[in-house]
Each structure stands twice: as structure tokens, then as C-alpha cells.
Amino acid sequence: MVEDAIRLMSLGEELESFIQSVIPKSTLVRKYGGTLFTLKPEEKEGQFCGVFVYKTHVQISFSKGVHIKDTKKLLSGSGKLRRHINLKSMDDVNEKELKPLLLQASKL
Image 1 (cartoon, one colour):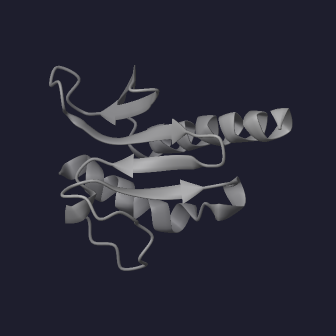
Image 2 (cartoon, one colour):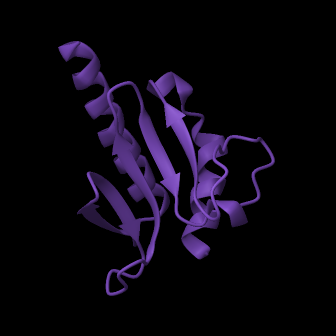
């Protein structure tokens, strides 16, 4: 159980680093129990995505995910705006597929 928590925390940190490498001008904001990424830190709701570590997975949440062109069908969710991807390990992360989603999200 402790090993799982450590593994998921590490995955969350790796995802945060990856997002920063893809969108280097983004600002990290610790909020809502996770890490939000924004290009507009002065705006209350200016974030384009976030990383949240849960007990069984790590979630990348896209604030305006409904507007992202997701040809690989990686995004889940049925809310008005948000979409997400749940990951259990770095093996679940295809950086080539994730990068275009992040780039799109940062421009919305």
C-alpha cells in the first residue's frame, strides 16, 4: 500500500515535469489538492490542466477538454467542459500522444 502511494506520487511528479517541459512558460499553482498549470496566473480560473494524485491512479485533468481534438480517444469524461486521463504508471503515458493534447489545452 505504501509502495503504491509512493509510486503514484512519483508518477504525479514525472507528469508535472513533463507538462513543464512541453509548456515551459506555464506556472504551477498548488490548489484543490493537486497541481494546476496556467499561462495566466493572474486569472482565478486561468488554468489549462492539472495533475491530481488519487489512491489508485493519477489524473491529468483538462479544464476545457471538451474543445480538444482527441483523435486517439484518450480523454474521458462527460461534463460540460472538463476531460481527463487516468494513469497508473509511466507505462500508461504515451508522450507523443499526450504532448499535442497539452499544447492544444494551453491555447484554449
